[in-house]
Amino acid sequence: MTDSKASMQASADIVLANPRGFCAGVDRAIIIVEQALEKFGAPIYVRNEVVHNKFVVDGLRAKGAIFVKNLDEIPTGSTVIFSAHGVSKAVRAEAESRGLIAYDATCPLVTKVHIEVAKMRDAGMEIIMIGHNGHPEVEGTMGQIEPGQVESDYDEDDEVVATGMYLVETSADVAQLQVKNPDKLAFVTQTTLSMDDAATVIEALKAKYPNIHAPKSEDICYATQNRQDAVKLMAKDCDLVIIIGSPNSSNSNRLREVAEKQGVEAYLVDNASYLQASWLVGKKKIGVSAGASAPEVLVKEVISQLQHMGAQQVEELQGVIESVVFQLPKNLTAAASKKT
Image 1 (cartoon, rainbow, N blue to C red):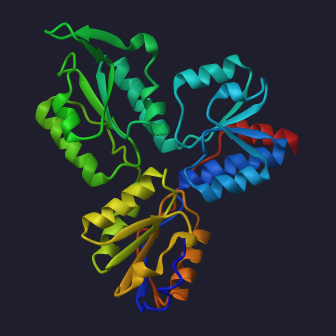
Image 2 (image 1 turned 180 degrees about the vertical axis):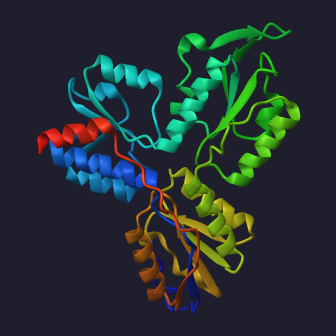
Image 3 (image 1 turned 180 degrees about the horizontal axis):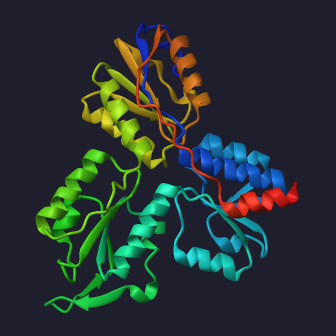
């Protein structure tokens, strides 16, 4: 929480990265939940957090959204929204079998990866996914493989070696990986990875499997790339970086790591109350950015608190101008228009 004892000991300036905060996929997901609540009334059920940000989730919960881990928590025939991270085919099938009215807030860039996986499997390829174990996006993408398509094989020591789709996080995972046919192999990545970390793993994959097929276009999304590039640029001139985002936000954690890899002290905070004025002591320039699921209101609150702690001028850096807008699900807009 806020450390007031060290207050006013800092006289640093604040630098704001650009772009920062909400991306088009997050905007779209939040609008889907808000429109569903407006048109159909509460409760609206959402499988998992629609985006990984406590402030956003708490705000939607206050409006009548109910967040659940499993579909069996939802009454039959109710409305459910799938989160921006995407879901497996099994989840979609379960929702249909239980008579749930589903609206899909999956980011279109995640959907693009799902389509790539389907095409790769149709081509008879095994697929390696680069991502973080347990992240809902990874679970959804890995779940694009039908259970019947995942085969088993045995190595020379009669140990089971899974074939079909594999998850790796590091180059060490690649070194231990065994596949059925190295010449019929492809890879995809989680959309919110560190570009540098992903490049290292991809390099290891290509070294071990020279014939591996890459996606036709980069899987790491434009917003992730832009925010990481902006933090890299900003951090070069800073001696402290504050990233605004929730602890379970992959892209926010990657921004903190990007700053740290520039040799800069960096912290991830959910909101201004987590700032400690002792962090500012002796600092001359404080960089501030926000993950793609963190709203600008939290940025403003952090700036205000930093100034209360003694920080001075605020400078906003130039950056890539993002103009991407994703359309809402057709079944939602059609249903909403019937209600009006």
